[in-house]
Length: 216
Image 1 (cartoon, rainbow, N blue to C red):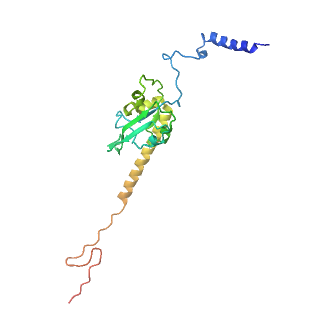
Image 2: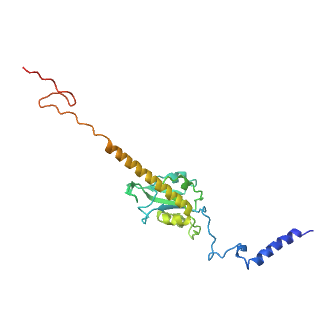
């Protein structure tokens, strides 16, 4: 019969329309921004920099190696390495980014910077409400705006952040064990004995046997 498909489609629409007054699962929209759908674990938007402890400057994981800047396809990352070193949160002297900028108007959210970072310092944010009235400076995110705590990272990516922390803890434990083993090996190594001191008046060189003396 002509029009049967249209009638079936309208029946589905009518059933969902009427059912939406009784079953919330039938609603296909939410009252944004009062209501928000939860974002999935793997959702990503723009990069952020992770820091440990409560100090965003000293706890920053980034050591300005510039790998992310080199590998970024749209070249939206700009880094200037510091001229000096300062202790990180573990007390180890490290370089740090004096300047770290990301132009989010150019960023394509490809996550390549995250994949190539050897220090787990750069991750992807979930914040998508970043519209600005200005076209230029407001879309250039600097180090202060990009820096986010590890607690924030755990809130937006709990599963991923837990795995990253476990890897960092294991790497730190392995480095500490290697350091202790090297120190123990150095302490157990026998000291090299000093060469014998030649008697006064001897002309022998250090390490050589003194010349034999004869009695008259």
